[in-house]
Image 1 (tube, rainbow, N blue to C red):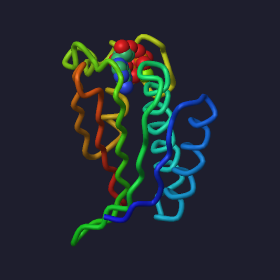
Image 2 (image 1 turned 180 degrees about the vertical axis):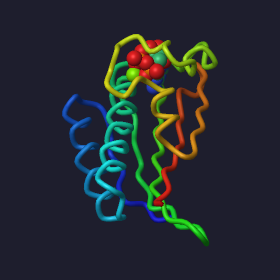
Image 3 (image 1 turned 30 degrees about the vertical axis):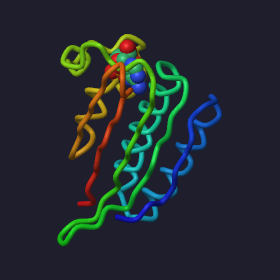
Length: 133
Ligand SMILES: Nc1ncnc2c1ncn2[C@@H]1O[C@H](COP(=O)(O)OP(=O)(O)O)[C@@H](O)[C@H]1O
Ligand SMILES: [Mg+2]
């Protein structure tokens, strides 16, 4: 796994920075324009959540190379208040702010691998991968 960039999110403008980074990497890795758009949507949604609900944290982008596949791994971590009812939040239609990405369930459906852990002590961590096809 090769780290491509770490983006600290603490300001509204950092969301735009994260979008620019992931756009460039997704293109470089060879994702289709449709997948590039989807991956940018994912990073926008996660960065926006981070900024809105946890104020600050980080996004790390990796090139993930396994024996048979190449992909992009997006890791998002904050030390915010955490998500009280993760199960509910992952139900389609729960999203409150009506963003384009349709919230965390939308992120999960776009990506090939998705895991989330969240608690009031540890904050929220999301680890997600999209493979090249
Ligand atoms: N990083 C985070 N830290 C704390 N709470 C979060 C975080 N991300 C999401 N949440 C909580 O989960 C809910 C659902 O998030 P999401 O699916 O993105 O929908 P929306 O942002 O539209 O409400 C949010 O309303 C918020 O309460
Ligand atoms: Mg959201």
